Length: 196
Image 1 (cartoon, rainbow, N blue to C red):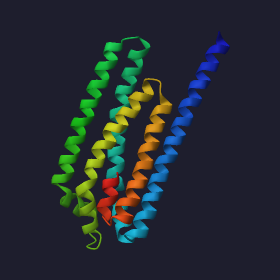
Image 2: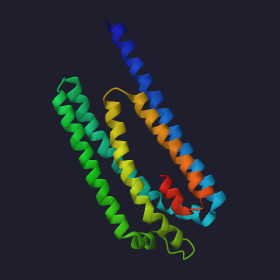
Image 3: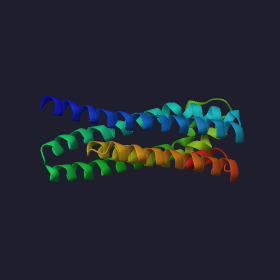
Image 4: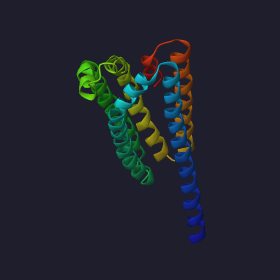
């Protein structure tokens, strides 16, 4: 019996490990390709402006992880106890919680994008890029928060491979849209934000 449990735990660990590794690699590839596309098609000032927004992006990313992990833990416990009605309630409330928080973030950044840009940057050359980027980026934050929550809950439901595939597909879509919007459609720094 002990050997069987060790095998199951080891197998589950490998499934989650590879899913997490591939997801992280896909996300890093997305950031790298974004930097290449922006640097090549727009220029170093746009790349610097995007870099200035990274702390805000990291805060939203951490928040989206918190929003996803909490309900995932509760859902995992409910799944283990076979309380499926509670699982459904957790999924539903997590979705609406993510949506409400995401909409508040979008509204806050959209209303105060100029003030945020001025707070982050005092360089007159970068400010127009930063303001332009911050006009569109919050909508990507909304989607990122919802997707992060969904990925956490899908993993909690026992499907780490599906969550990894969805994340990798999103990263690939982001890369393709980034190249199209910036490289071929000439949308500038907003094209990068739209691709997100």
